[in-house]
Image 1 (cartoon, helix red, strand yellow):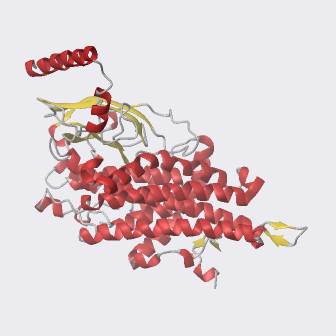
Image 2: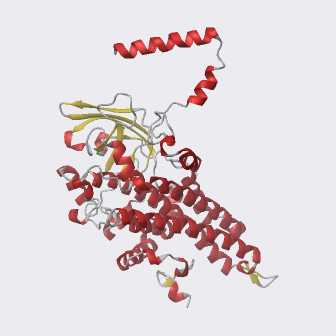
Image 3: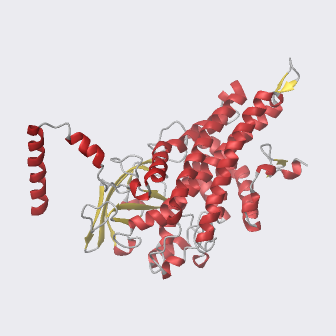
Length: 469
């Protein structure tokens, strides 16, 4: 019975948790079939490269090529451009499967590629250059990445302070510094966001641009970290003039791109990557606990009640996180005609994905928490052998911590959820536009008359300079 419930892993049944614990009712027959194919590719190509990448830091190009050969590097590309037209549930499943059975570093590369690709397909219609690019993602193995973070604002990637763009005769002059960009120096195209060419101080006035490697100063091979050794996240600087058709959308469209394309895919895939990693930890824990015996007691590690309690606790938390994520993805599909991107051609102002923003944030928190806590517990289940590299659980632990601190960090994300729940959506203040009057009034009350007069003089001077400008 158990073997028939297991995925095939080479010549043998997979030794981790079996399909009794899979929420397969969310998947179509076609999605189950592509999952089986991806698991086979993971066993044959991607999982071995995960070990090599962790030990050497080599970029997993073979893994990217395997995904392209399978036809899922462009999974989100609409069918009219030759893609799969995969829905949100399918993207979640693919990312989760890749992280669990294959390579967490590759899953993050896939996540940032797919996020950037969503930004392109969101505004592809009518732009021949973008339409051509997205139609060749799989056939030409064109892996991309999103370069959005800002060194000045840390995890608040939606607030690009050190960037800008201007209209020039040749098209656009784009200036950008990004603190972290996955596939840095290895991507074949980059999607970046700056303040708009029409920017006047409102940080919700943003624009999105498509660039290629010769236009990007990528600080290649500088990634040296606790885990995720193969994703090559690094700083990027852009100071390039690009053609007019390489703006994605139009000046001022960047906030809509964030809300409707970038963020929904990012949070779906955050959940997929780190729930998959948590399941990978449970798989390793199960294999070790059921196979390792203590001769003095005649028991396996799995026979102890403490192990069963640890396993039951971790699995319950991971399943809760997975079911939340799949339910969230399913509702996104319901609101978007099964994950369609074509609606924006008829209605550029449509925002069905953005209407789920408050539900997207907990998906990331739950998955990153599950990955970290489960991998930590499975390391303890595996004991001294787990501390060594042979069982791979120590690698999963190191990779798992990345989810917690990746922007927006779990702390930042929980604050957003809490503030939204307590005071409403406007209190989140994505673009740093609202004055914190209680804090301001409290600080002003501390000033004596001399300090107040000095502040008045300074503000008056700044007002006059702004008026003159």
